[in-house]
Length: 157
Image 1 (cartoon, rainbow, N blue to C red):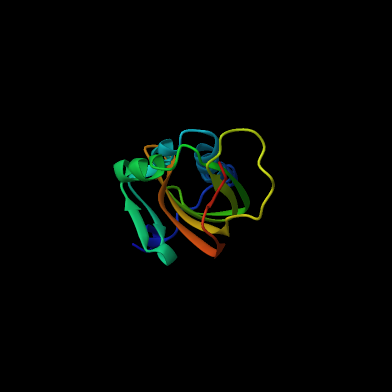
Image 2 (spheres, rainbow, N blue to C red):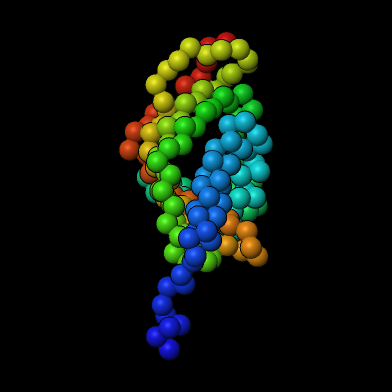
């Protein structure tokens, strides 16, 4: 009975593969928001996945709601997220957590060309919970903590 309650050990290669898969999700999310189709971020979540921002009292639950939320970003938004210090902790063969720092540079009203550098709009970290579903790692929840932030600037014109 005690063995059933013990953590599920992973061999070193299995642990490394799980960590890398979860790191990849963290980075893929940033790429999809900045360089791809933002609504496709929903595919990185479990069907009942949750995105929350406690300070903003926002909570978005479920893939369809996530698709609508991320897909509603302004078409003229230019953003770049810098992700760093990604630390994944594998808890079992089907569960993991991570913390990753983020800096977001963002403006609305972008019509092309180069934008004059500015301070980041947000600096904070994500706390992610991952689940392995049918052999694929997915985000079960993402909580964003933003101790530094400002409104998104709108470019003139």
